Length: 527
Image (cartoon, rainbow, N blue to C red; front, side, top):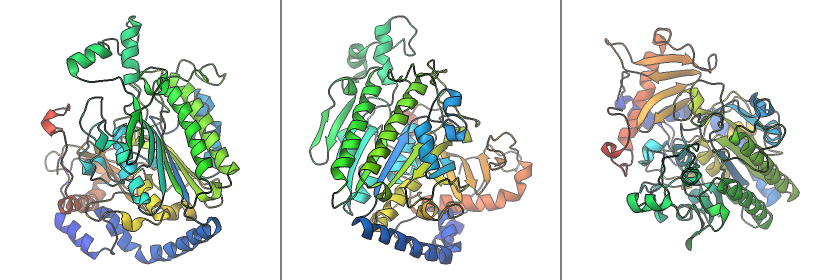
């Protein structure tokens, strides 16, 4: 254990032995929580099973599931959180979706893009998977084929699976979505930055953000990195072919072309599969919002035209509306869960082109501004509208919740830790029925902070025998402005017990070894 709080592996193991049996292996604090609530949750689960069975009888199949993951959209960015048109980023359709269902004020992700994509696909913190960094073109790292994805779990129980958007989990074929459980995938390999590398080279004015990039040909010659392919169409068992045209060629125009093609394909997919015998799972990892503008919306009267991301958010708002209207028109809205969540807080590097958050910190931080994100769930007839629960959810929970709703909990492997918590009870029963009390916030392989109920500990260097921590009540102080050691002295031992449970489980189920060893990763020495 690094820093100043000590752990107790023996305590963790004893809790694991005492906890109720499970088809998969949760983290230690979650095992303890399940033990305390075993009787209550069993009664709730029986009622949930009855609700889901009635829905399945009505539609003749399990519910469809759609997860929409956006990029760098901060807590407070959408209109329902005080942003929207008032910050030059109109989001009326997204706001309508939020009010028609459940809007989460305490939704959490990992602190950056690749880590959250790992979490939503595997239900695991990235540190457990061996993939510890945000990926860049040319890296050989990627999501291990031995990891089990949401698509793989749902495929085992008959779901049709498809993804569109920013994959960002490895360039090589073994990392690709068509080899990670997706029947069909239309995906970009990288984040949005490489779209501007060559543009900066061609601009020659020195005003573009990557003015020192040497151009694609020189980059290939000197670094051996080929940027000629920006994305692929992949099919399970058939391999992949490059996306042709503007949507597959790196440039500032690619992202809008890609998103327009994606929503066209997504709505057609819904129409084609609405009446199928088997349900579908869609993972839409939208390029909203990167640093590219939307030419369609850049001159929209409510859009801050000097913030290129604002116009792209307006485009995404339109596309989500098209998806929801298609579900309604096909008569399957009641049998389709749609969850929208951002991958991390805003990135201010290219300000004023940027998202925004009212919280302290940004993308890359374990501060609330880096990991607390807007999220909402929409399921007409199943999720009661106009809900704003205080319950905490984490992006890993979407993996386990999808497995529960799809009848695939027993397909989750039991030879590793699954960090995601089944939140079906929260969705169907409302506020107070969430099942998450503990949350770990990792920065690569370092645990930087963790939360239990309303209390959050930032782990620091201990001194003079005192514990290394800053203590916050993030219900009272979501901006993390008033943290200190001494007001939290009463939580030192309870928090150390939680860490004992957490790290004890790591001893039982060790992390996967990283592909790139620590000494070869660009990071500050000693961190």
